[in-house]
Amino acid sequence: MKKRIIAALLTAAFTIISLSALTGCQASSDASSSNASTDASQTERSKISLEKTDFHLGHLNSTAHLLGFVAKEEGFFAEEGLDVTLTLFSSAAELCGGLESDKLDAAFIGSVPALTFQSQGHDLTIFGGEMTNGHGYVIKPEFVEGLSDWDVSILKGRNVASVKNSVQDAELQILLKDKGIGIGEGSDKVNIVYFDSQKDAYNALQNSSIDAASAYSPYTSLAESQGYKIVYRCSEEPLLENQPCCRQVAATAALSNYPNTYLAFERALIKAYRFSQQNKDGTIRDVKKYIDIDEELIRTEVYGGYGSSVPDPDKQGTVALKNSIVSLGYTTDYDIDSLYNTSIYQKALSSLIEEAPDDEIYANLQKHFDQYE
Image 1 (cartoon, helix red, strand yellow):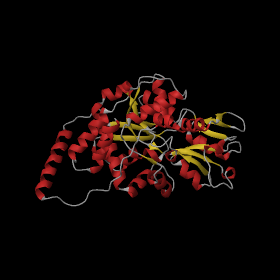
Image 2 (cartoon, rainbow, N blue to C red):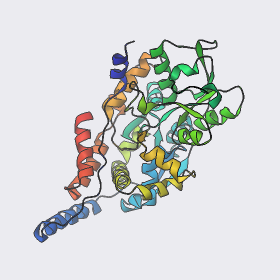
Image 3 (cartoon, rainbow, N blue to C red):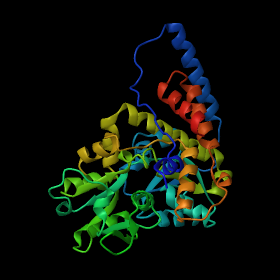
Image 4 (cartoon, rainbow, N blue to C red):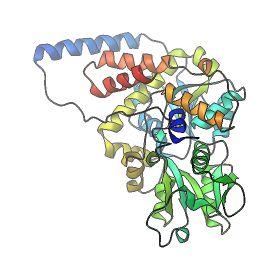
């Protein structure tokens, strides 16, 4: 398959410009008018009754899920009237089970497993985004010794640890297919060994039988700090750049039963995104409370340009990804529209813009949503 065809299926440009906080003062009459508008909006919101205030959010051991961490630590959930409990899970399958057993109200789930769960009949709806890019593969240093440059072909003849039904696995298969490299045992193929979680796949590098492994953030930077070499980061691969990864997912019925609650949840995540663009040090401190690794590794993963955590649903990009994994045989095709809700994000963002009409970060989120909804 030609690169441009795969790229067309896989990517939907996702570029949101990070802007610094607005400074300066307006004339006193303008300020009074703006304050009055904000006060009126907040008064209107205070009249909205949340159907439930106790809220359980599931996440993985990833710096990419920072919107939930920041919203909790900076008080944005509390501002919206929510008492949110964050719970760490080890895999997308566990997160899916948490949603279906009503133990979780929302979860950050990888786009590929979210799509495959939907195609298999799980009544789960994607209603927002959480991460774009942020993953790749690492290899033991002896396999690239003496080389100054390499690509995915370096994995030929190697045993590679990965996670079935994951974005990382789908991406690897896309790159191998583009290079004409088969999957399986043999010197001209890549032998993929599957594990239940990313943590297990990464830890498998300690075994002599495993040569390389998949890695989502922060495992890529962590591996590099421990002497492993990066095979590729998806953000640097033309076929994989700007890929929607983790999505906000909830039980479809819950979104219908608790609309005001999910609106408040989304508002808090959008506020968290705004904070992450304006306060890098504060964001890193918040993330470290949940992902306890060196702060510089967090900084690399969050602000190094390898991935981004944005709440936009990015429906176009996710639909393109669905088409791509269907073509890989990863899952069967299905009608995604009934299981993709963009109205919650749209309403949440619109309400925040109404409260802060001059906020450029919110304005740029709206521009992107209008283009890629």
